Image (cartoon, rainbow, N blue to C red):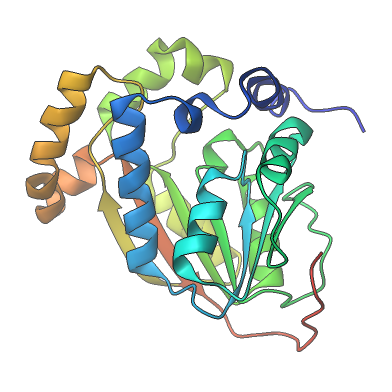
Amino acid sequence: MPQSSKVQPFDRDAGEGGGYVYTTNERTSSRIALQRHFDLIREAVTFDGRSVLDIGCGDGFSTERFFDEGSPRRMVGLDPAPSAVGVATGRRSDPGLHFVVGDGHRLPWPDDSFDLVLIQGVLHHDDKPLETIREAFRVAPEVLILEPNGNNLGLKVIEKASRYHRDHQERSYPTGRLLRWVEQCGGTVVHKRFGGLVPMFCPDWMAHAAKALEPRVEASSLLAYLGCAVIVVVARRPRVGTDNADPR
């Protein structure tokens, strides 16, 4: 099946760079921002002893961290970009960690195959975000979504001005729309938090300044809503089946 125009830039990035630019370089802003994303997710859900699917795992950078530090029983990373999955697979071998090439709109597992699904930074690239969320809820009773904060006007400017963001066709969504999608797919929101302030790919001085301000912004409901970099949503629905086949 030919790659879509959405997948091609990511496949090219991973193939040419041995991974994505924000996970393989030493840029301060990327390191700080990704660490905050990691912390926000770890604070929102439990990994220990669970089976976890990471939809849109990319080069596996975050998937590996969650596997190593969260101690899930089994973790699977899925991504439509073959080069990215190749990077992830080639980096290590572990019986509890697997990476597969696949489409988040049509997951190759039966209902309730996992305990938790992560959708990190995927929907703002997705032409059919509702289908991805619906499939996530089909294969797991708990779903965590991390997305750029679509209420942040500065982010909207970056999406238009940054060549990287334009090339990767990024577009963020207002919180209300994201929550409606979750509800339409049968989920009940149990956790919602805005977090982070450091923009990816910004100069080091800006990254350090934003990080210093981050706790104050996160502590204010209004400032967090308008200024934080990302939103984390956790939603649940009742289990619909008992088939927990080993998703390899």
